[in-house]
Image 1 (tube, one colour):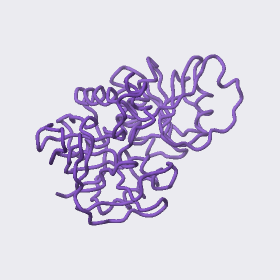
Image 2 (tube, one colour):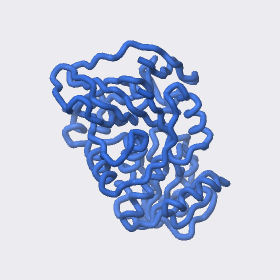
Image 3 (cartoon, one colour):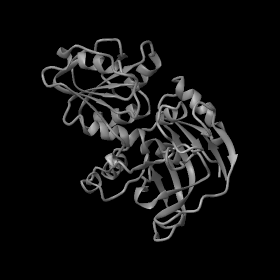
Length: 329
């Protein structure tokens, strides 16, 4: 099979011909149809995530069809389409797992990081962490739901009942969660890189009531802020425009250092919290929500061999929405 492989951090991915993987106990063999490119993949390639499996096949927004079973697995049916997200497995018996918070399991392993992922024609995945995908989405448009959607949804859940929602970093996750928030009657204020007129126009087409640079003052204070950009300086910027009692929610797995800021920005019961990974509950809830809305997913497709080109486009902000690799079966 063909696969794009990361041999070491800060190197381009290598197109390789590899043996087809064999599913172990509790695993599915999957024929990959599409795989989204997430900003977490950039952090992996740049060496900002510690102790990855090397060499590793990245990719954790996998749309695939069931092609075989490991021992102890007999479903879903062969040929059924499933999705594989970032959380690839957890231990199942620690206190976090038994409380339904497997996203915090210390023995969890992650797709495209500690397990080979979906930048390949075939992969294997733990059957308990594969999910039925909404039928109304093509493979390319379903892929971003599996991380941009799921991690964005977990962050959105922690915004509770915020009516005025600020979103910093208007990429794949933001463009999906903006639609969810607006469908629920909330007002979205979008912040982009300063001077990003195209990104601001994109946010307004999705229903944001205002869109401007992260260095600009919004038209009204925020009840909550979701930060999808990996930029620590956005935390005090968001606190500055946050109402008392509001929350700043950092949704990325990696962020540059947060600069020192005066206590008065945090006072009046404002808080800053991070989001880690996802739970199976998040996946089931969000995919059901995506089936019922439905969401308009903006995605640009690239063939597998052009993964490095797609990664460069994502890094340089040349993509409105998401980038997705297709396998060309």
